Image 1 (cartoon, chains in turn brown, orange):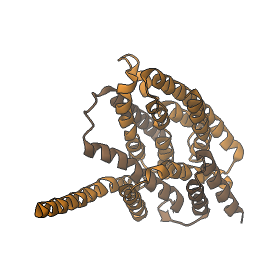
Image 2: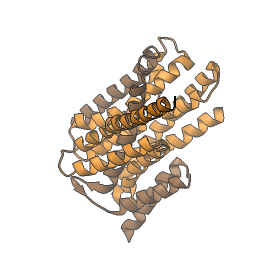
Image 3: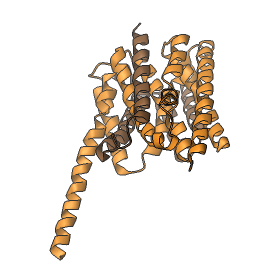
Image 4: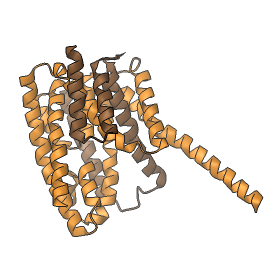
Length: 100
Length: 230
């Protein structure tokens, strides 16, 4: 049940943001500080989510095979690999390190 | 333009497979996983939500992280509305497809006709492929058994990293990312599940405030230097 509540709230909220952008008159949200904050918010969240899903297990900080996988993905990004290759590299390296 | 739209559609649509697998691995049912791709249809928010649910957060803190990630779509919509000029009746339907990729393709076009065409082709391709590949991924996950043994628990963070990388062009962005990582890792052992990511979101206003102050400080110094020269 909790999962369905979370799905419902997320779907509603995300749709509302999409519709809001298309519907409000241009200029309403165009204040520079609002625009800067909107650009920086995903940066903070994506960085935090990357770190959380790589270096934590429940409430514990851990260093395991995922760190190697994400390191390889970072290298692939520096080498300008396409999106799918980056994800595939992370998965393959993580699996490979786990078999060691 | 059509080839661009199809190319983007195929590449990102296929990563729906990774989402389907991740979501099933996080313990969501097939129906729940498919409902997310059908109804939320913005990848980063979906990955964030299933990650938070897997960690055992309550539904509202889990949704809040996904929700904040979705704010950027409002700003895409703002830039698209003038370009696409959709009528009031079409807007609620078109809104569902306002995401990173459709915006990138549409905003790259110079006139309304090709922008609308790019938006529609990318939106349709992505929507169909994203949902199909989510379904295949979710079905595949049960066939694979333990998804962690296949390294598939690294797919979610790799997607986040790939989305994040092109945003780290200048120093405020890097400072926000660094502070975000620090905050989430410091908060993780002490705060309940779901909350650390929200705490990390504070990195954005904090860096913006500090950066704004130092930028104003520099401007102020320049002004006084110019005043002295004058």
